[in-house]
Image (cartoon, rainbow, N blue to C red; front, side):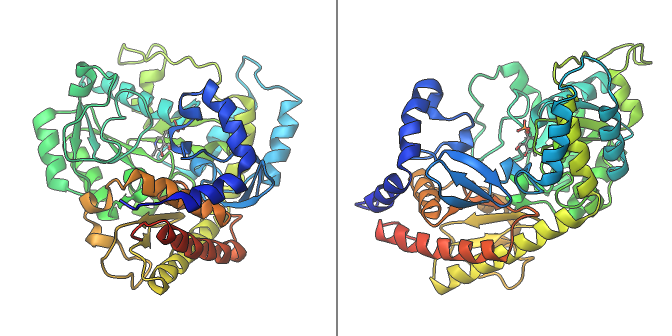
Length: 453
Ligand SMILES: Cc1ncc(COP(=O)(O)O)c(C=O)c1O
């Protein structure tokens, strides 16, 4: 353990002094002073005042390049003019008519056009609600209970899927607060392993298999497209519902999502984030015969109840329509993917120049950082460390190092989401240069504080 780690903390406390003060109020209100676990940061998180394009401004007035992009939702960048105008126009007309409305039709028709597997859909308020709904629909349709999920894959925080969504993966640990009954219905198998999938389906006869877009937590352990095609083939052969969770990959990696990249047709798809243009919203979409579980007087004779005060609310629908019109041009995904590739290259150059024990990798608009890395340096952007071995890719790091790393980057004007970042249409070459400089400076500061970077 390093002896002194105070320099980063001292500089950080000086630079973000107003955030420090707000955090004192925050701690009285919210457990650990935050409203989302990922925003927890020691000694304190920064408070943002506004966000525009690729940047957010802290309450102290510092302009910071944002790699959180609204937890993935802001593919267009912050406060994109088309979204602002759509929402402003709608807020004056109605935010909740308590009735069917035309914007929900326009929103749904755009989803259907971009994602042809979406024969029918229901809107929800979040990705968590969408995956929850996908499981219950699968159970109603098949009459079976068990669900197969992959180790490390994140599908939201509800009881059925939160387990095994993050490392460590070395035990059979059960998330606290979840009943044994729920836990027993969830079968966790290793990713990218078709034989394990076949064996698990044979043994457990599940209602469904759920897979996170391009792999654990936005591709920490990337999914091979051949594997997703295997999942499709195996689930079809074994008459099991295949749910692709595109909450983060949907409309982001390509207008048609990861399923269009892999050329597969899942039975159901869950979507959120980009879907609603940065406002709250999600949806479950898929085969019309399966979605009949949500219909009144359906042939199954069993209907899933689906209320939800804000389902398809007009503000989210207005933002979603505006966002999907831009998504349909292909430009947002293409630009975000290109800029992320350039950031990955720039960071690997910094790590090589500084002989740092770090590597950047990832696909599409994601940039993943592995610390404690002594392996070979990437020779192309297709490089995946450890030959894609998920146990080595998907592991946890020293928490105090993680906090210091994020604080050091913030000192250089970069807000990094833990060990990963995502880009948007708004990120540009100036951002890439400043990001590379911030990483170089962060490595120096971390070393000064005694971390073995
Ligand atoms: C793949 C995936 N599924 C589901 C969710 C949950 O979505 P939400 O945060 O909207 O509930 C997320 C959120 O990050 C996600 O990345």
